Image (cartoon, rainbow, N blue to C red; front, top):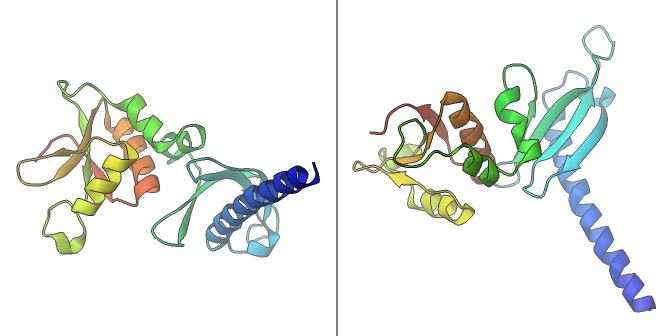
Length: 189
């Protein structure tokens, strides 16, 4: 019995330490954008199973007054680097869904049948790839569950999607999960 309780305690501590690590990395990324990071207050922070941290932060402005709790989202990029985004009116529609659904679930929810016309997420090749999709990126996306359409000239696309907003939701969430660059396109080349 003691051994079982000890095992449960250790497992719980390991789980919590993973949350603390993600939360602290998210805070570091967010605080890098603040004028007074020492004044930061946090609440409602959650580490999602897909690696995104969602929460709210309150900081002091230049006049020394608190601005009010503002939602934020943070996520790991390549390596140990994290990116934090303060959710506002401009990015709410394509950032906030990442707190509710995983990137692959967002992709599946926005995807139209292949026979339909629509908007596409064009995958950006690395600068040294001469405009051709990196095979490692293709493998990474396939492993995550994305179906990549490769054009005759070697460009990669996700889609079709019903509108530009859908491509922004999918593109942004796909980049969070994979680190692959993208932009919205109405055409395939």
